[in-house]
Image (tube, rainbow, N blue to C red; front, top):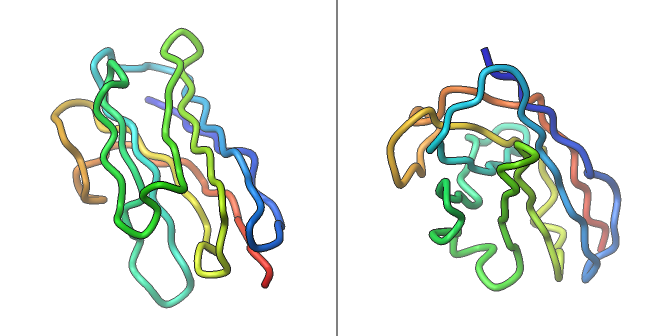
Length: 124
């Protein structure tokens, strides 16, 4: 089994920045893709960004492109999401996820493991 633990969420003013981290433990899979998703109450979980094993392919949702940056440190089994120029509409619970195989991975059903989520709130 794989455990994913997110951290770094919180309350920030519009225009501010936050950095989310997601640490993986347990059985990890070499070559896996990692992703970030977000969800607000009453809506489906939506794709934010994903990153391949080598870190050289990083697709983003249009809504965050140019503001968010995903990265990973495989030696630490950790993936990051740097969020800049935050907007109130970025307010959500952010989840990291791991896909055992395959690339690219944009849909929730394509991921095998999920973290518990971390709340990000952006005030106007």
